Image (cartoon, rainbow, N blue to C red):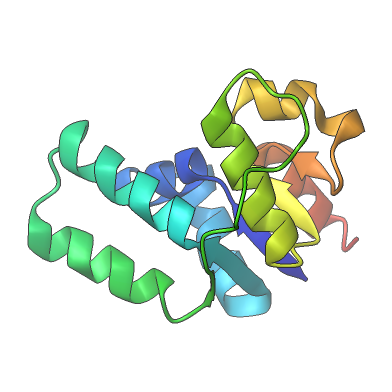
Length: 134
């Protein structure tokens, strides 16, 4: 399955132990992770400014993620009306990367899940889906 993990899931996966780290490991081993230039830029910004992760660690994170499918920056954000422009770019990246699911903790994306062009789920819902084998 092609899986796009939103920036907040990736930050949690690299910054803490827990569900998001487990989700990332499982996706890397058993599925195809779809990341995009937009996600990588946002991830690097958050790791730098909010978490103050040293450059060597950020480089290791980038190296780990760029061994997967990296979607070039889409020409435009997704046309779905969302309050946050960044969310539209994330959605455009997932669609451009032919992701089968977008995993996020972003409440704006989750609230609009029934209108989005692909399933959008929380890390917990995704984990449960994997455990059920579907």
